[in-house]
Amino acid sequence: MREASLTRSPVRAPESHYRRAMPRDGESSPPGRPVASVARALALLDELGAAPDGLGVNELARRIGVNASTASRLLATLQAGRMVERAPGGPYRLGLRLVALADGVLARLDVRDLARPRLRALVDATGETATLSVPGAAEAVTVDFVAAESSVMSVARLGRPSVGHATAAGKVVLAFGAAAAPAELTRFTDRTIADVRALAAEIERVRTRGWAEAAGEREPDLNALAVPVFGRSGELAAVLGLQGPAARLTDARRAEVLPAVLDAAAELQRALGG
Image 1 (cartoon, rainbow, N blue to C red):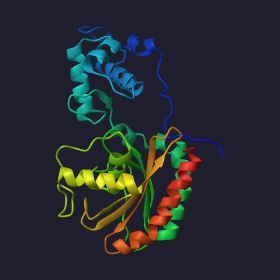
Image 2 (cartoon, rainbow, N blue to C red; image 1 turned 45 degrees about the vertical axis):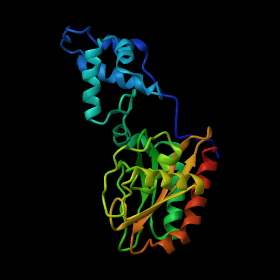
Image 3 (cartoon, helix red, strand yellow; image 1 turned 60 degrees about the vertical axis):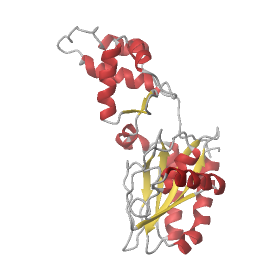
Image 4 (spheres, helix red, strand yellow; image 1 turned 120 degrees about the vertical axis):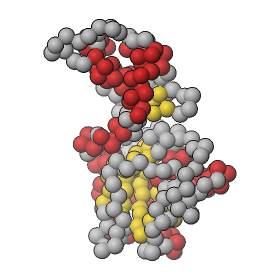
């Protein structure tokens, strides 16, 4: 089996590609030429794609050849559309909406191809919906799933972001990814962890045992399990999950199906070279 990895080196346009498309500040675009603001926004995304640790406004402005106020306006627009994101006071990074919009591209990613038969096998073994998520800066996004065939089933949605403190996949990202726990915890149900200290203790449990669960914490009738999948360099490459109605995926049933989820995640990790 050929080796595969979730992450690939970004393919960047030549440095002059966007420069030719971008008039200087104050200039207008000639007829038939690309719209300057769009070209600058694309240049910003291109620069952020090549900087996994993120970049600040001044550096981005310098790199695409505009002043800081222009870069700041562009970034504010992109952030409002979730194309970029940033922690308070931190650098800008690519946003998770790009993952949601890239479903057609994600269908060709090796991790998705490798995970698909394992998702099917999980559904066959457990009768519940199996999911594949990829981690972002602050959450995980569902990129594939196989739905259960039973009459009462949990239906996942492609592109749906997790909630770090209220979902099994989100807890895995907080425990093993680069995401930091939010300072304010929204309560979705009466079982949502809404205390920062309680969340810290929960995340430590996830790190210790190597898997996460959520029981009615984001949606009152939905329970789930999630297991990390690590890549060749030890990074969190994906999250394999199982979810189902609370009445069926009870505490006892989750304990029964957990070994199947752990085995499927271990197989996917080996296939990824982790």
